Image 1: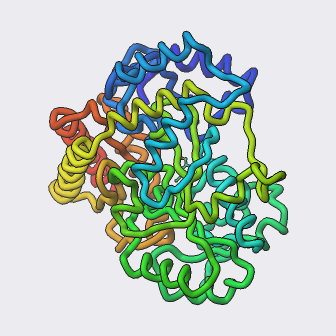
Image 2: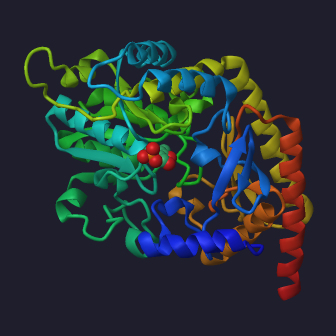
Length: 440
Ligand SMILES: Cc1ncc(COP(=O)(O)O)c(C=O)c1O
C-alpha cells in the first residue's frame, strides 16, 4: 500500500476510541483502513484525495454508485418532512407494493434495518410457522451476524473432517445449544445435502440458502441442487428461506426468478436501501401471517424503532425504480465482458486463476481447482497472499476492490470503466506474476 499519512493519522485517533480502531471488521485492513472522503457515481475519493473506480460499492449495496441525483432529490425532500415517526407512513406501503410486485414469491413484506436482521427475522418466522426448532444452512455461506446463521461460516480442513459438514462455532462464546440447532449441508452437493436434510426433517423449520454465496466462492447453485431443495420442500414440512441480500440484483425479480425457485421466505437488503441501512423479509401469506397483530399477540412479534423509516423507504423506492430490467441486462452484459477479460488476462499472464459470478457480480480466484462449493474455493495462505498483492496493486492504480476479490458493478459504469478495470488487472497480474517467478 502506498504511503497514506492522513489515513494513518485518522487511524491513530480511531484506535483510542474503538477496539482496533474499528467498528466494522470488513473494512479493516493492515496497516490501517481506507478512509472515505466523498463519492460520486462510480468514483470514490479517499481522505488523501485519491480517486478510484469503486468496484466494491459498499459491499455490493450501492447499485447506483455514490450520491445518485434521483435518490438524493427524493431523500432531501423527505428529510425536510421528518426522518422518523411513531406512526406508520405511506412511504412504507408504496415501497412494499413495489417490492411485492417485483418479487413473485412476496405476497407480503416486513422491513427492518440490516440484512443480518432480515435473516434473523426470516429464521424466527420459519420456526414460528412450523413449530420446529432447527435450521439448516450451507457450509461457508455468510448470512450476517445472527449467531445461528454464522455457524460453520469459516470451517477449515482441521474442523470439517472427512464426513458430513459439522456445526462449527464462528465466534468465541457461541453456546453449544446454538450449534445443536443448526444442521450444516454442503453447497452444490445435492445427494449429501438431501440425505442430511431428510435425516433431520422432523426437527427442521427451514433450509437457508444463498443461490450464489459470495464468501463460499460466488459459485451459482446448480440446477440439481435447486431441484433437490424443491423435492425436500415438497416431501417434508421444511420451508425454503432464500438469502437474497446480494442476489436480488441478478434479475428484475431477484435470484429466485433467474434460478427458477419459489421460496417460502426471503431476506433482502443492500440495494433496496438506496444507500441507507435496510433489510426486509418477504414471503407467502401463509408464512407471513406469523407477524400479523390483528388477532392479539402475533406468533412472532416483530418491532424496531427505525423499521420502515421513511428516509430509507424513500431512498429505496427511488433506487429500485431506477434499477430497471434494461439496466439489469446492460450491467449483466458488462459483467460478462469483465469475466471474459479476467479469464483472458489470467491466460495471457500465465498466472493460474479463474473467475466466478453472474450478472453484475464477479469474483477473482487465483487457482485452477474446479470450483463447486466453499471447500473448493477456500484459499490457501499462499493464494491469499497472491490475491492480496494483485488487489493491493489495483488499489494503488485507481481501482477499489475489497480484500476477497468480490467485485460488483453499478449503473454509472459503462465499457470505459470495465476497460480500466481490465487494464489495471492485466498490469497487476504481470507485475505480481513477474515478481513471483523471479522469487522462484
Ligand atoms: C449474503 C448476505 N447475507 C446477509 C448479509 C448481512 O447484511 P448486513 O450487512 O446488512 O447485515 C450480507 C452482508 O454482506 C450478505 O452478503
